[in-house]
Length: 494
View 1 (cartoon, helix red, strand yellow):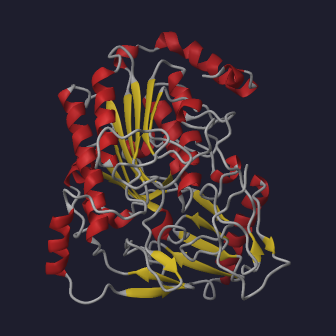
View 2 (cartoon, rainbow, N blue to C red):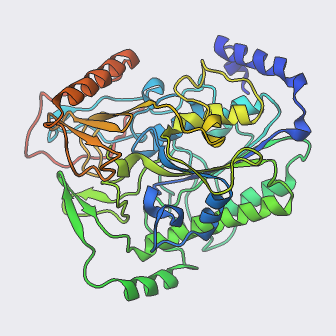
View 3 (cartoon, rainbow, N blue to C red):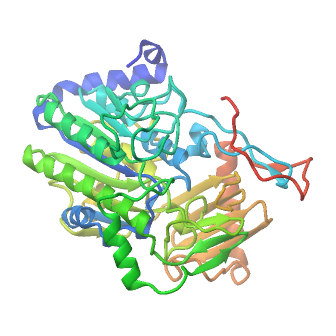
């Protein structure tokens, strides 16, 4: 950890707690962590959640060996906010990262000005890597970071090793070398990025210090755009699609965008298969090295699949039976494939129907590691140990705040889930919608008019939370003009 970070009083407090706890813990018996984070993978993209077009035998095997969460939520509907929430256990609003970095610029064609948020994860934040590293963990990061410019990369935030993590969200130069990733040089022409990240992860497992526990955080660029076929799997899915489907891909309007209604994209399916192959390789290596009995494996995605786009286009993925996708606060944008295999804790093939959110990983990992909770750090997360032990009792309230415009045709808004009820507030459209997710998980039947008291209560609760969190809100655009040019990429410096 950098000396500059130790000057922070909160960090000094955390360090003292970990040092105090250290003598009571036996490093040889400590838990290791393997965290798989996929980019833009929707809830319906894996076989364990019902996909019949995508084939994910290794991910499905992981689910059968651990616990699958049917209501696992990302804290944001785009990448950077969720990634910050996993790293810190804090809500994106609290760390002031509510949009993908750097986001879109404001423009005259929009009636609202969306707020500027922070363009990096502050160094003062204590990450899960730093929390574990203080207790002797080896920390390895591979893949997509997307939490700030150089100086805010993984090795500045608690990771000993960084393979390919930098400021960009999509893989620069694409998935095949020669790419232009500033944190990863290609070894050979035509090298496939996901295979390379897997190889580096395997090498870490083989060369790590066996006397110390580890955190291996494999953050795939797959299945983010550009949609480039995985050459080893594309022929299979092209043949499968040709046999299974006739006619054009069905779509439907989603507000001012268009949503894909069928999972039939061979290129995307091949990219999912690349992730599954990688998961299989890493799980196999754990078993080979006899690490599978004391390594917690977590599988998650940063937001829903990209299914909805604007200006007559639609996305490469489909999240049915959930509505919409990446960028949207409907379930398709925030409900994720979520699996945890914790040896000695989770029952094989178990399922939790109680909702959880990405901030929960931080306190859960601390507890599984035998480390004390740090509620001042992971203030917005809760340990999932009760759920992992089979206790689904109790309810929670979840909040999402996305006051930005997004290329998926999403307009500024926010949402709240309280029990089975979910309300979405659309600031751009000046309206709101209410759904009962127990009866309507696809969010097709708006109950706002039929339940005005319920809608009012949830709107009030959402507004109170935003005020408490000092959430930045969109404001009227004084230069609003209907005939302005489309949004451009934000180049603001933070």
